[in-house]
Image (cartoon, rainbow over all chains, first blue to last red; front, top):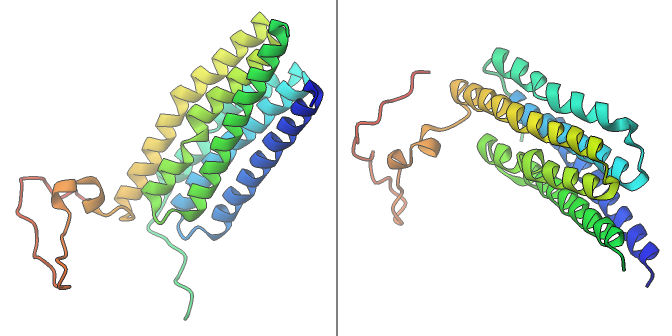
Length: 97
Length: 131
């Protein structure tokens, strides 16, 4: 097994895991019964996106994405702060049984 | 095997660790039952996962300027994430999505095996939070 094969397999594993994580987080954003659950899930999604951009930089060597990383890590929390500041007592109604 | 190859492989391995933490967070966010446990699961890629990914990026690019930028990214993340998590937790507490028994362990209500409530726990002086 050559080094290149190892690198390819690892790259596919990294990409697949990150994509699965983003899909699961999107599931929680869709079904999460309260607004705060969705906010927590979207916070997690932001850091998963940052991780994906980092993986892209590391795997292709395209360092032009670095400013994007800085800006995302700076402003990624503003959305959750804004929503949490103005959140009311609301939940999705229980589904009928 | 030169040291650049070793650094490349180590970078890939730490990237894989970060990706695994992202996946664990996804599973936890979907499977866990309430707000606080979901927050607990969701912070995995926000700190350790991201730092592992940044370490992996630096191990593979190996340039000083990029390393500085990556340090800056990690620093900003570590500074801003607790602020957001604090606000979310406080909003959850104020809107009644967090039971007080979850954060005051002394006030946990106990149910004995016969199925009857054991009664309220003794008041240990902990104040009830204002709504």
